[in-house]
Image (tube, rainbow, N blue to C red; front, side, top):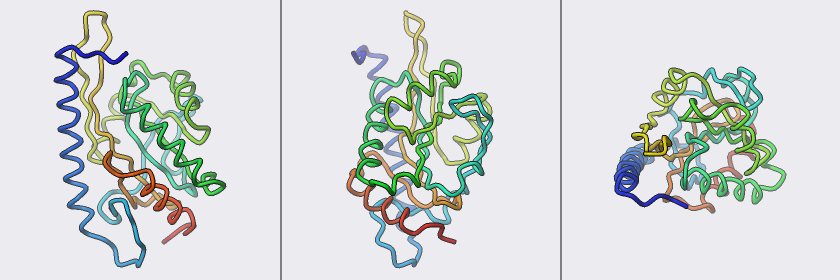
Length: 212
């Protein structure tokens, strides 16, 4: 059950304020489209975000980098396994999107980056992401590595104060960053955008192969 005390309400207020700021920023970026003749429904961030690059640990305990996912369309999302609502809803939505893509989905990977590395071990991440979709990979690492990656893509997260039971929540941005098979940032999906828009753009991006 989702807590409803005043601290949680304040947490959610900050959470949605961050989402609003991110959505406004995405709207500004979305006004700058490449003249590639493609009908994107999501926010086109081509040329406005850096390539996919990180040094983290996957949900099998293996050190990985952005280069390890070249050749796949990547959907990058920041969250954590104890998240009470937004993360499971987002991963469930992405699973449905993958199902709707059919065989094309084999060319995509969901990278779920933990903003709570203290609790999200590789084993916990593996069980969590695989409960949603077999093409999802959990990524964790040192707090410094997570913070570096978050800043790279202008994401944000904040650990909330511990509750009486010692547990805590983490407020975080909820955008989904989409990279093409060459690791180039191409699209950004915000919470207000529809599943149909995601399916449309991913189908288009996966059908392109490896754009230059």
